[in-house]
Image 1 (cartoon, rainbow, N blue to C red):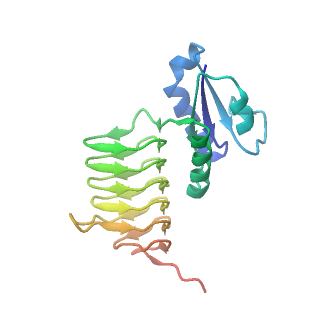
Image 2 (tube, rainbow, N blue to C red; image 1 turned 90 degrees about the horizontal axis):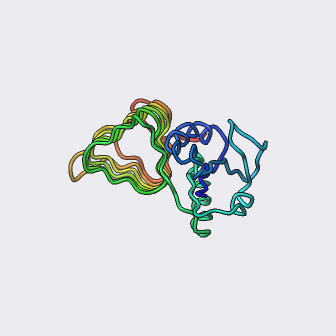
Amino acid sequence: MKRFAIFGASGCGRGVLPLVRQQLHADLEAGLADLVFVDDQPSAHVMNGQRLLTYAQWMAEPASSRHVNVAISSSQVRQKLVERCAADGVKFFEVRAANVVQLDDVFLSEGAVLSPFVTLTSNIRIGRHFHANLYSYVEHDCVIGDFVTFAPGVMCNGNVHIEDHAYIGAGAVIKQGLPGAPLVIGRGAMVGMGAVVTKSVPPGVTVAGNPARPLIKK
């Protein structure tokens, strides 16, 4: 039995569940695979029609192989859970909606979540465990690091580099960079909902507004 799990039964996990069901439909119907939610603090025994187990419970069930997608919005938590699973020999699988558009020369590392209506155009490199929510797009010649999160409707235009653990808020627009001089969103930076990013954002900085500017705590 192949064991598949969505790690996290909150909104993110429940949102990707139908996509995973669709991907695994043939094996689930044939009894060749099993699909559950895994959560460290399960609130019920069943969630949206699937069993909800602790990680220890899931690991204790006999399996020919184990596969997980970590559907946690917090990139820091996502990384910790990925490291736990990797240490236990669990494999990672990608969640991809049937209507995702992926064009030419796109490299996508393991564990991604590509929600409905996501578009990846050409000459793109994307790191591990990327989350791209509904209607987001990545244009040509972009480089995206590990554990990056796009909320719904992110518009990432060409020649943009987004470093590890950056979070891009819903409806944000990232202006196109230049060949050899990309616009850079630094490691751990946060771009606010609806922000229009016209210049690079330093690591760890939160920006918001149009044009996007650093938020200053008062």
